[in-house]
Length: 556
Image (cartoon, rainbow, N blue to C red; front, side):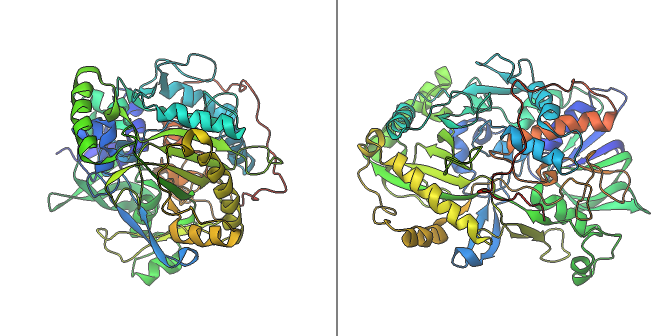
């Protein structure tokens, strides 16, 4: 194995795949990607509906748990994270959502020059190849395919009909001029198969570009420093320790949980936390691991007799066999489903200037992250709070690199988050009870008797958990608690950069995979000292405002 490279990328997830691909476009630059999981090329990854075999299990999945959540009746939450090339883009629901324009203008308002919506939109366009939409809001010719679903599930139309019956607007493009409304998600699929970040950016060049090295089943133990300069990594592969050196930079792309963990294991982080575990302090950087944000999420679950909804039954099994044949022949049908087919961005109060909740309408019954299955068929609807006030943290369980970090999202730590979710519950319940959906419900096992605010609060505490969007633990900024600067360089160190969702200062109003890919596209330019895109005025400018009825969007 070669031991020296220009750049070492720690983590083969969305950020790592993108930045490695773009850096190796220069044949004079050598890059090594280190991924703890496998190659991300199995049928379980490529067949969209096989997500149900990965999210609830440890297949291609770190399958983390949180610490006990005091505001959630002391329950531990579940945090699936991808463990394969492609990272969480190899196991997610493939939803392509960028967030609201305001989110990025807000980042810029915090001192992050170059991260306003007008700055980042060109990088979204650069990454995207939209199969259907060709306008100023979308890209054509990028590596990441974005397509309409091919599942042909009639519950899509029923969901839209329910929205109209409820008086909610429809939206054919959540990434266009307006985010608000109800619609069917576009997904990162190509011809009915998952288009993970690895399949889009990395795998086409593996074994082709001589300057690209990819090592799987390799876990980095710590970053190596000479003084305050990162010069390499110590890694464990097949039971043996190896040292690799980086002549230019070490790029951390291990995600919102493991990037701060690796920094702390390497002596970079809050001094007291490092000393508590007997780790020699290289740099007291108090923001490492702090500022964890995630979307708290509640799931409505309903039973139905319709075989259009997925589930477990003899008739459903017979239909599945037919769908397997159809997928093999056409790359269409049930196996192309991402399960979370319908979506919505809605306002719980008319006074708000942007949506504060998001829905994921699922054509299957979802209980405990699909870790519990019951006989029969059903459908579900997730509702999550887009910009929660609560802030959690990632800390160390020990100084053992093999130990999982301690993850505390602190859901509902701010009591206003719970009150906002009460409003979100009511609006979502109203939508689910519209005739177009209610007529298909045969049983409402959890929410049928929930008819008061106090009962809503109680069930929210009992059943709320993550919708898998952790960010912010190595946030970008210019203040004392920021971990990286607007060029994604770690404050106080040299030769070390972070390129993943941990750098987001605040949680964006939507799914986080597309924004992570955008961050990596921009990072490649920052690293190379070039600019492949021109800053542009968005087709419709966003305005930074804080409505008095909304969360203050504090960073601390």
